[in-house]
Image (cartoon, rainbow, N blue to C red; front, side, top):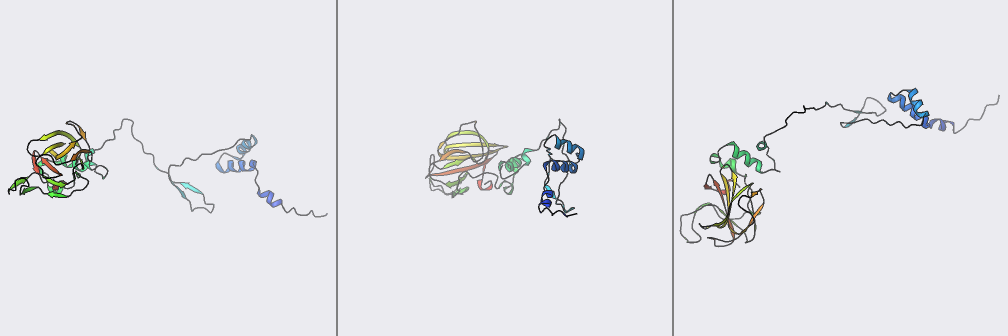
Length: 248
């Protein structure tokens, strides 16, 4: 007998799996069964298997084949009538600066709030705060007399500078202040806390209007008892003025 010469491409052909063989092997490996896989392959159908993954897929080190396994996570369910609620005033974030103020005002009487607790709860009424005249007793810039009580903080600002609401609230006054404030806007923030904005050149809000912290409500000016363009800013607690720097 003469030995037939070895086909140099035989091993290469064997290593190539036909689509028929691929389907049957996959069916056997995935649990479909070899006979079912042969039937699927013979019918010319394409077998598609979708594996749902609800968590990160982690590499498994249990085998040399590099198979992947998915961690199983418990289902989170709730009854259809379940109510999901939370206290809005208990949420304080940098994205909601009114949260701290609401929590502070609802936690206790505004009259008993300490300076340490109120500091930083109001926003700046101007983009830049440069003090021109502080709160308290001073020499009157109008009469030159000593002992005048200054009811707010004066901040330097060119006429026409945007004036912002220090916090959310309702506009309760917009008009002429007969006691030197000139054009004046008052905002009620609830629970006895109010802010006032004075010597304005104009205002863009109406009485009863709801405003949010940072809204432009007016433009600074020098109306009323004023010696130059600036903003006179007041903070009132239960009708009495307090130092605005204790809230800014």
